[in-house]
Amino acid sequence: MTGRGARTTGQATWRYRVYWEDTDAGGVVYHSRYLNFMERARSDWLLALGFPQVELRERQQRLFVVTSVRIDFCAPARLEDELAVDVAVEELRAASMRIGQRIVRQDGALLAKACITIACLAADSFRPARMPQSLRAAIVDFQGH
Image (tube, rainbow, N blue to C red; front, side, top):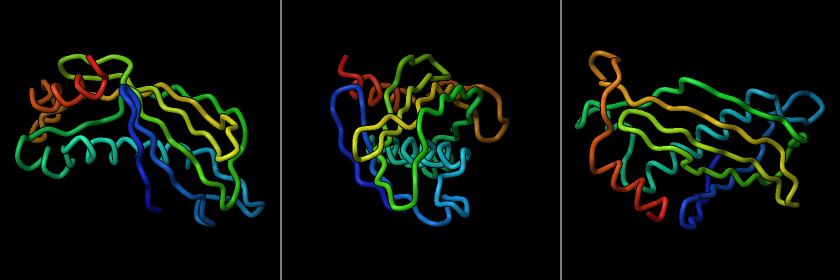
């Protein structure tokens, strides 16, 4: 699955296509796949900000983990749908952030929305650690502040 991204101040949108591997026998997307699409968009968002996760781990000894997910399923996605997956930072703290995400089908139907809390950890100890200042600055810039 490849994504195409678009960005406005405070929100980035990535587009993905639904493939057979994402669906059940009836061509409906499995509920857990929505989280995969959201994860992919957050990873693509970090890449677009200039912070590949491998580099964050290897050079800055930081990694991110999901600590909380609240998701509302609104309508089903189906085989070959094109999905727009939004990433918007709702709260930025020293060692965590809360991200709002939405998945919208190409016809504009809201399929799912989620609030995801992500913690920044030291890669060697898996203990909470402050985000690199350069990443925080990029996120603040992304938010348009």
